[in-house]
Structure formats: C-alpha cells, structure tokens
Figure 1 (cartoon, rainbow, N blue to C red):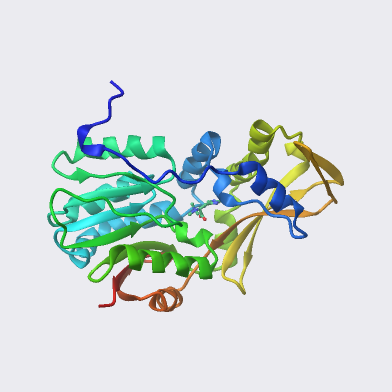
Figure 2 (figure 1 turned 30 degrees about the vertical axis):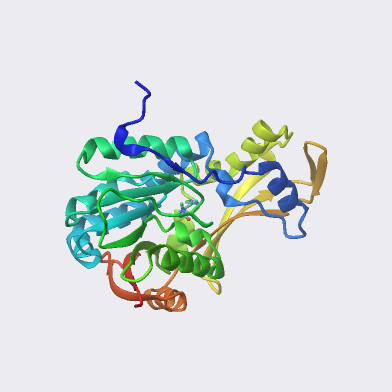
Amino acid sequence: MTKPDAGTNLLDFEPAAQTFYDDVVAGLSRPERSLPCKYFYDERGSKLFEQICQLDEYYLTRTELSIMRRHAGQMAEQIGRGVMLVEYGSGSSIKTRILLDHLADPVAYVPVDISRDHLQQSADDLHRHYPDLEVLPVCADFTEDFELPVSRREPTHDAVYFPGSTIGNFQPQAAQAMLRRIVRLCGCGGGLLIGIDLQKDARTLEAAYDDSQGVTAQFNLNLLRRINRELDGDIRVQDFRHLARYNEALGRIEIYLVSRCDQTIRIGDHAFDLAEGETIHTENSHKYTIDGFADLAAAAGLTLRRHWTDPQDRFAVLHLAILK
Ligand code: AVJ
C-alpha cells in the first residue's frame, strides 16, 4: 500500500539538516531579536496556516484562486506548449490543477519541496489525477541550487510556477537572488508564473495578519510551543502576544511576538531576559506593486510579459520570460 507510484520516483537533494536549535539561539541573541519564519510550519503550524487561508480577513488565497480560475487559459497560452512545469512548493494542488487543465501538452510536472513526506504525497495524488503526465518530484530547498530531472520526452522549455505570494517572505534582495536562480534553472526560452500580494491600505493588510478569531495569533505563538516541544524550552506562551503591523516605508507586514512582562526564558542551556514590551520579529510579508516587482525581476533577467489581477487589485499573478 505504501509503495510509491512508478510515475513519481523522487529526486533527492537532501537539504542540509535544519538546525532549529542553533537558529533559535542565534535569533534570540541578537539585539533585535528574531526567529526564522520557516519554522512556523510543523504539523500544528501547517494546520493553522490552512485555517488562515479560510479566514474572511485573509483575502490572499481565495483571491489568487479566483484569478487562476478566471485567467488560467491565458496563462497557459503565455507559458506555451510542451513545457516542463516546475512548481516551487507542493502545497497548492487546486491552483496547480487549474493550470495543468489548461496547459497544451505539458511534458512533465516537477514539484519541488523541502518536506519529503508532503512532496511524495502530493506527487502521488497528482499522478493519480493526471496518469498521462510524467510527475518528477524533487526534494530540495528551492532557495539553494538543485537540478531539474530528465523527463522521458524532451520539453520545448521549462517554466517555474511559484504561487501563494511565498516570495513575499524574502527581503527584496533575497527575492532577486531567487529570481536569478530561476533564470539559471530554466535558461533561454524559460518563464515564470508567480503570485504576489499587492500593496494596499494598512487596515486591510493588518486585518489579514491579525484576524478577529485569533488564528494568526495562534500560528505565530505556535513557534514558541514548537520551541518548548522540540528544544526543551520553558516558555510561558501566555506571557506573549501577537503583533502585526504594516511598515508602509518598506511595503511589508511585520509580525512580532511581544513579551507581556519582564521575564527570563530558558531554552536548553541558554537563558534570555526579555523586558515587558520587548519584541521578537518572526516574519516579514512583502507587498509589491506590479511595476516594483517588474523592476526587481528585470534586474534578474526576467521581462514581464503579462499580468492578471482581481477586480479590486488586491493580488496579482505575473508571467515573466527569460531574456534571450
Ligand atoms: C505563506 C508567506 C504567503 O505571508 O501571507 C500568513 C504566511 N503569515 N499569515 C503570508 C502568513 C501569517 C503567508 N505566506
């Protein structure tokens, strides 16, 4: 029963063992304390994120989906026939299927994900729905170098699909470095279809990241629970609160954990003294304008060919081509 489908043999780049403990200690030792947002997604964190995606205030997921439903035909036309479609992350199977349903004769689908279990499961799932499509999962950290698998049929070109505004978690410089990697990966004739969240009023944005049901707060606080669980921490989670604020100058939502009192937290052999009101920065979520993102991408060697938005201009999906 657990035997993997023949169509979804996994290519493994064995991402370097994550050093959760070292990253936590380093982040909490800085004068401006911070923790990497990639650690949000343990089992509970991933479930909480799925709940976030259903919230009224969190417009991103459903808006991107509506853009996909409406314009997938045009997107597929932009991408072109005979593509090897490489997806960064493998958590968005609905959007992926909408796109695949419209693509002309795709040669292979290549989901790239750091989580091997998640990857194998979604790859098998997809293979069952598209038995004629070659599915070639790659276990890798897409912020680092990896290679594309070889498909049975030769693709006319490669294109990366990067939905979900995940690129928003990266500082613009790191985002640009990632776009350069995509250019190197796909080469001439290649392309990128990417979802980005657009700049808008602070109220809408802050509501999206501080919802009335407190799900995002739980998502943020879960990082402390995870530290307690996995790193033998003694943090009193109730002594922290969630804070989301829009930094208009930098065009990004910033998420913090704020200490409710003077306290000492212990993690393994380390102790950290926090004053009342002191913050731990846990996430940035960058918001772009179409032009701003196009400029960033142009410097990485990608030209904006076409873009699609919702009627309220909240979210955008961009198709960019690699300059010949
Ligand atoms: C998964 C990075 C797109 O930035 O909107 C949602 C993560 N954090 N609510 C985002 C997140 C808090 C999300 N991304």
